[in-house]
Image 1 (cartoon, rainbow, N blue to C red):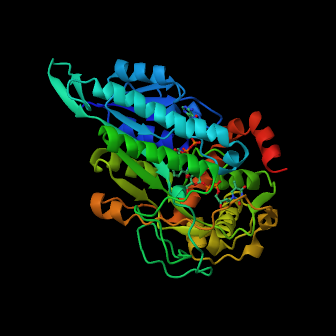
Image 2: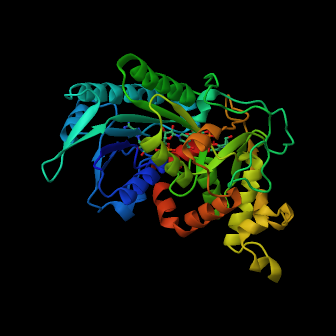
Length: 411
Ligand code: NAD
Ligand code: DAU
């Protein structure tokens, strides 16, 4: 089946994994990666697929309505998977306008251009493709918007010591705990706190309004924190891996007690694939790892994993035989063994810092059969290995403007 799909933000962290998955899995589709290449966009993330015949890159700002409308027509686009956004909470606190422009106005611009093009078709929202043998193929259009769990606000930490989680999944690890009784459901009322999440919430509302008002076939998903290769080192996990490598201080906000629900990025990309193809129009799906962690516990796990990988810690012969994710999972290595624990530096808390996020993704599991595939300790080990094996990638993205950003943000 032929499809012509635009993936916005495909040069970013999650977008590059989605582009890679679609280009490799669907050789019969045309995949267009549309990205402005802001500081967070990097075509080096897609080196392995850039020459594939079903892949094309277009440098464009999602706010450029005219150019996007033209592209829709030229490429007979029937599907949009929209990830382009300003994505870092700390930057949104310093510069909210950029977030409103890209996340709200950019999304609105895409919606309106898509509406005009899809409504101009002989059957609105059905795009007709001419096949090589002269036959015609009709594709139902689809606007799939990728959003975040942060739009739901913050959950209470009413179980600060953690309890047995109510859910067990493939991804549940031995140290996995739930830090409260409540979870984010698809029905949870929106209550965003940061300029980033307020802008994402606004864009979600516009997407739903285009379905309810004009009948556009839309889907929205809200996902928890992603981790894995190619994440820009402004975010906790790659930033701290890089700092440990350089033995720089690790700036832990507040007491390091905030809780996030972590999902390996390839599991998110897999969910996006399933939902794009089989999700119900006008529905919302939550995507999460059922994998809550306090920041400080993650940070200690990262320090241990990096120190083992770089041979900075002395392990017994028996310990050396085990892989480090097994060692982490069984908590058998005391913090004191690791020299880089001393890099932990508690700093002023993030303004409006949300206490806890925890997604309930039961609907997605039950209706579409998706589950996260990786245990966190295993995912973290893979991630640490990737950043240590790809130091050129890290050195490239941390040269130039990054230094100014770092000094400004952490002064
Ligand atoms: P990212 O910052 O790594 O990548 C964003 C991409 O969008 C970059 O390639 C950037 O160049 C591009 N972009 C930014 N402004 C643009 C514009 N005006 N026009 C065209 N392209 C533009 O972000 P990410 O972490 O990969 O997140 C992708 C999406 O997923 C975002 O919508 C984000 O809100 C959402 N999300 C992220 C997470 C997470 O943990 N990272 C979790 C849930 C949802
Ligand atoms: O929940 C989904 C969201 O996850 C996405 O929508 C966002 O795009 C993504 O950036 C992420 O937001 P967070 O703010 O949770 O991620 P970040 O990596 O910035 O921070 C994770 C936690 O670590 C958070 O509690 C703040 C803390 N932190 C972060 C940094 C950068 C620190 O303690 N020190 C730091 O230097």
